[in-house]
Image 1 (cartoon, rainbow, N blue to C red):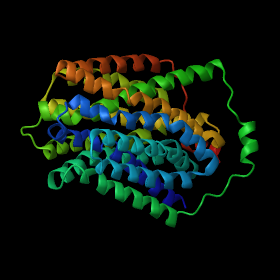
Image 2: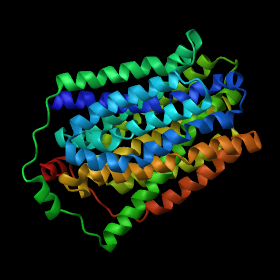
Image 3: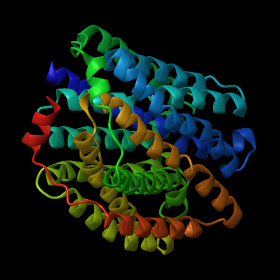
Image 4: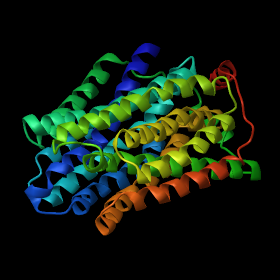
Length: 395
């Protein structure tokens, strides 16, 4: 049972980030078709990211009550249908509507899938690390699939083909993975373990929120702007596929950091992992504001590697403090904060670029935000817990 859960949890994370980043590459080929600016077309994805963030909390709440398996089947089928709706959209309005539907169903995965994974994983840090790698591979695949399908077919195929594949995974989950055994007396244990608020918990929540907001906004801003940025500062041609390949290089290089991050979480204090990472991130963002060529590629790969490598530390803190019966809801709160913050990257990248014609004034605020998160990280408690103790607490 554990191996099947891990496979579909990783497939869920892979497809989740794949589908949410298709439009960032496809939009490069839409300026001529719809006669709108890059910023205007990019803003069509705002409903997707808003619903992607706001939907996490109700999705987590529903996952605690109706079961992770049912909600994940709904995630796969609904997200695939939303992607197909984008591919069949006749006007920009319907593109925005289809992206919104896709984002609404995609919101299910993180709170429900993470709780499902943690419930069944025997080695939590390693499982979170490999699951994070699956998400990064989805991000890396998005520009590759979007660029290849757009180049060899058209931009509509870049949504219809992945959408059909994602819906098929949902059918496979329904057929292969049996329903989870219900936890006895779940309602009574929820009431008995309802978390209480004190000053230490409030401080921890505020610091975690700072890391979530900073990581999500910086990561999403780079992910959305990277195809356009590389087309201007790195690429030697105008091919969408060439730009997609450069983005793929960044995601593949940075994605391996999550395995390292998962192992570090099992061996080092969480604060050490988080503060050290953000101390390295600030100069990399400043460098990205002014450089080009392969130096820019290396700087962005380093920033994404730091963000991805520190995510297992954040998720381990949430798993440690959240009672098992409230875990999906806790992850719903975690992701509604981070994914809602990520939606701010849309006006940041599109609006600032249309106003200035440059990404310079995009990266400087991101560097300032990373510095703020670094300062907030100094207030984290010195929490360190071995894997076997965290696993025993979850059982």
